[in-house]
Image (cartoon, one colour):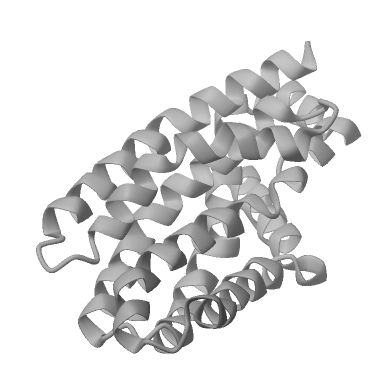
Length: 215
């Protein structure tokens, strides 16, 4: 348990070191700022499509730190040393998922408040957006770590990670944007279910990928 706490603290320090957690935040806010320039000042139109735009921004923000989630630990032999000490790859993957989510999920939810104002979302839409991000970003974190493990050490890993993650994240995107509709409770439940499936499968898929990369 103490080792798990140390590893989680290490993942958090890495997530917030050198402004790493700030980059997804800035990216998210930049999208919210630039979107009205592209669409125009029509508040009703912005409110109608702004929630979907913020979900796309959240998905892309989860991609930004993907190259430093697994590859540095594999290259430095850290994961080898943990395996020698008896720490299962699935446990390492689960800790990385939690650390990645804590590094970008809560900051993104905070950034959603001013972003919703920029896109003219009303209070009800903001509440639905926050609930969707709370339920959906853990699934995005699981997808990001799994993709990072699958592409670690490969040439052009960043571009390949995007090609792998984006199609798999489509259900989260659809249900997250659907939750912003007036009758969005069903979409919110489906979003929670999809996120839960990704969270359940992510540590095993990422663990298997890390084990294969070591062998």
